[in-house]
Amino acid sequence: MECGRDMRGLHAQEPTEKPRNPNLARDHLANERTLLAWTRTALAIIGVGFVVAKAEAGLLSGPSHVAQGSRLAATVLGVVFVVFGGVLLVASGAAYVRTGRQIEQDAYQTSSVLGLLVTAALVVSVILLSAYLLLTV
Image (cartoon, rainbow, N blue to C red; front, side, top):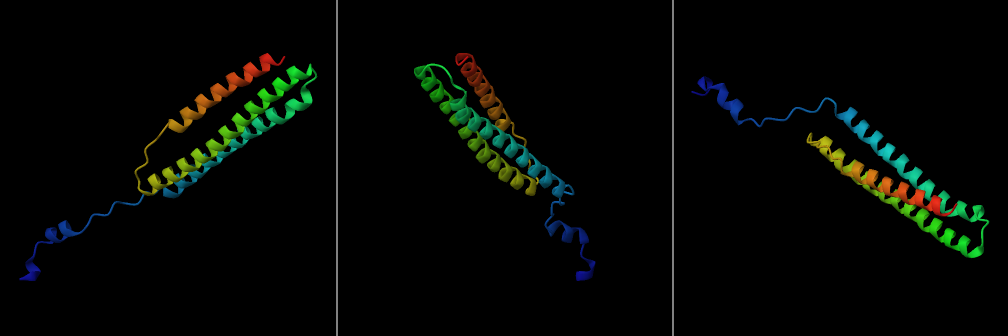
């Protein structure tokens, strides 16, 4: 008889659905704020590169062969900063998409790779910029 069937058997057959993350909107907004922070950082680095590459031409007053070498060094250093800023924009966009997917799947795993790479690149950039400033005094 159907009526006498154990209800526990029915519940065991139903798929169990994972409960929805109650903080989903907050997590996505935090992800967007992080993307915007990385974007501001990248734009600042690009701006520094542009200033280093372009401002040097107006600051030189030494012999022409020294000025030419200094202009070349400033241009190369400026281009390095601009390229680094562009790479940072791409990397931060990729991290934003990856983190968004992980939030949706409720499987977020923290990663410090981007932060460590940016820190290392900035340390190298500061050393190069300092060396450039010392050599052009």
